[in-house]
Length: 96
Image (cartoon, rainbow, N blue to C red):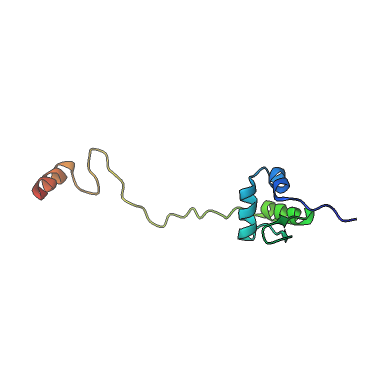
């Protein structure tokens, strides 16, 4: 016997998300559905299980912790990037 098709609201309640998010997942191709009419969607239990399986099987991407280059940082004592604060103030006064 066939199982009854799920409405978007039922899928949303089961997943704990909004109906809008269910529709967004369908548009993105993440969640498959049956188009009963142009605007009316239904979901099989199998489609919902496939979606859940794809979401739980994802492994996080490994993080590359290699330092490729360091950016200069502010130095203690008011100097930044090799200039003293006094030099920069004098330089800015000349701009005006």
